Image (cartoon, rainbow, N blue to C red; front, side, top):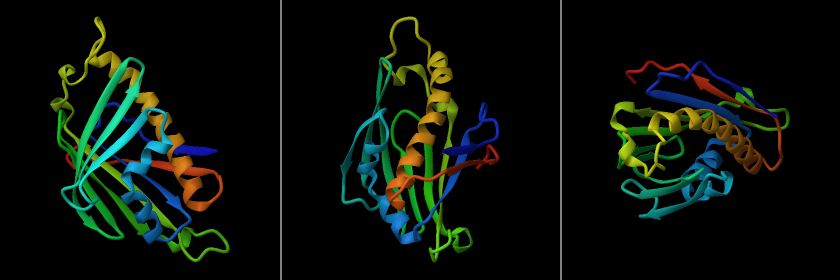
Length: 187
């Protein structure tokens, strides 16, 4: 079972999520840097294509599909600080950037393990930079309608993806707590 604690997310332009995995930071980081492998965890993520070697400047096309909508997110790695941080930005249609961060948290390691890691995902975006022209929407379907339908889907999908990732990293399923942290809108 995955527990999911979060503040209200209705009018935010930034979000930060974290969870604890029972592996060392180097192992968590190695998993995160294998971005094309993420397609194995989500039914709405068809594939990820990479242009580059994985370091700064590497571009990823993230091919998403839901309902009658297909969209490709174009992103770029901007900086790497192994095994602690992966910075990225979106390069098309919306102004957004963020990072993955890994911190060692030995106090959260289960009995029999030496350490654990807290993995953070921070996303900052300008909601006003998105418009309905970025999607090929069916007639009479507004971007607002799509956003309202997708919000709960994204949260549920995040729960599923995190549970699958943790199970693969640790080698077995367990209860996972995904925390959405409060952040100021100006981050």
